[in-house]
Image (cartoon, rainbow, N blue to C red; front, side, top):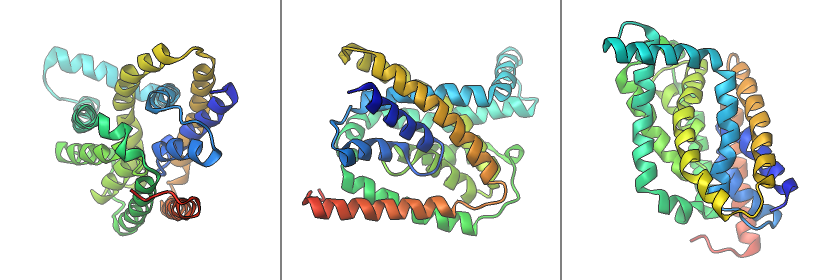
Length: 271
């Protein structure tokens, strides 16, 4: 893989990681559409190091407060503040995807990455995102979240093992279904991305480093992903203040239809 290809994939990963359009779908489709050799899941996951840096920097004040709350929680073993409660909610939301990732990692690297599967999930979850966002209420804030909400959003995150679902899309859709306003749903989705992305990077980055003859493409890709991830977070949090997720739902459906069209033209079997 060239440095240029890595930069392109890094930009794609970063821009789509926090928008509800599925970064895994774009990373699996981009080499296929451009005629490049697929870099593999280890490289795709390694690019997420850039997204990890972006979410850590953007929410640095939140992480500072949460870190102090976690230390206090360990010391007192009592939940007294909103930050301490949020620490527990983030832990609860992370557990389902962590377990599922370990159990289903082989499927995630093979069957789930077929273009037809990706196209189906892009369309299906796009329709669900639009329907839920349109029907959901707007009154709940992060401060109203309870353990049940965190668990349900965490289980929604499990679906993101399938390219096309979108981790942010699934979790924001779940948050909206539970009545969170768009800003709260997006913010909790971004915060809960940190531990699961961090765990995935820790597991997969060493694999890519061992298999790679040069780290230059990875470094360039991670840098591109960090910049584009920060941009995606900034844009989405501002956008959802006064706008719905409809434009992202429409994009997902159109992309899914486009992929099906290419599969047909190229004579690629759907299974």
